[in-house]
Amino acid sequence: MYSEKVMDHFSNPRNVGELESPSGIGTVGNAKCGDIMRIYLDIDENQRIRDCKFKTFGCGAAVATSSMATELVKGKTIKEAMEVTNKAVMEALDGLPPVKVHCSLLAEEAIHAALWDYAEKNGITIDGLEKPKSDIHEEEEEEEY
Ligand code: FES
Image (tube, rainbow, N blue to C red; front, side, top):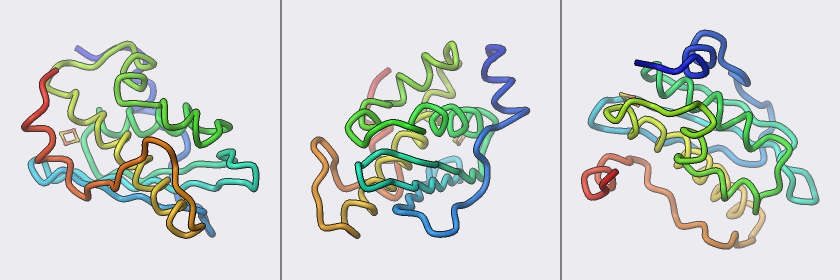
């Protein structure tokens, strides 16, 4: 049911933890399943993501997608990190079962929320970034996969 990569990132998640003085923090939850994810970003003066950590109180797919998402955004510029969508994360994990697709949305939204926090703290705007929701549940109902 799950790919080897999903199992690997679930059993041995990368970048778990917190950053002491992050440039941005994003927390999102899904009220339907009760899962919560928090992402910490350390962004340097050239708007490159120097470090990234996460904490996820959630299902295995949420842990695996957070782990992969942090790996994908690390070392990237903000602009590049904006291209790390839930689809990109799922592809990097060789897919997720359809019922678990919503879990990958948490990772995308948490990164966006952390970038939003960074942008607000620094008085900048990030192209294509919309104010994040704290609960992805509503949007999920409307979208089709
Ligand atoms: Fe809630 Fe996976 S079931 S994030």
